[in-house]
Length: 112
Image 1: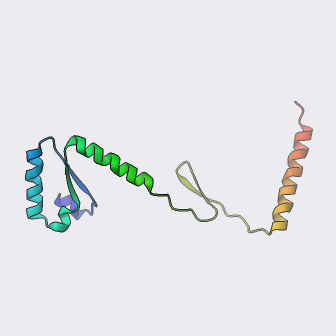
Image 2: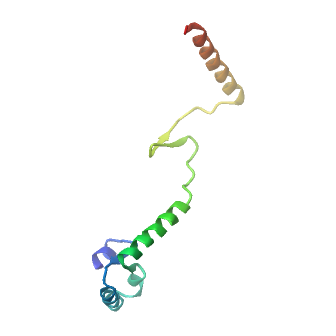
């Protein structure tokens, strides 16, 4: 546990099927590592540990994802940044009309 604490782990879980062994380990940690280290260590039976993991999963899902800056989109786990010129409303309307004209002419040319 000292190695985990020295490495900067935020939480440490001790899992054992023996309640007696968990009590002994808890007493050793409380006696040897100090109160701030004890706050980072939790002691569980296998079933309790699975319940704790489910609780943590629900807690993580409850947190909303941070909003992305303008021009960024998450796609398949990657952040995609788009650099577009800032256009006035008139310029945007002109571009939209031009693309619609190109699309309409292409649709007229194709035959089913």
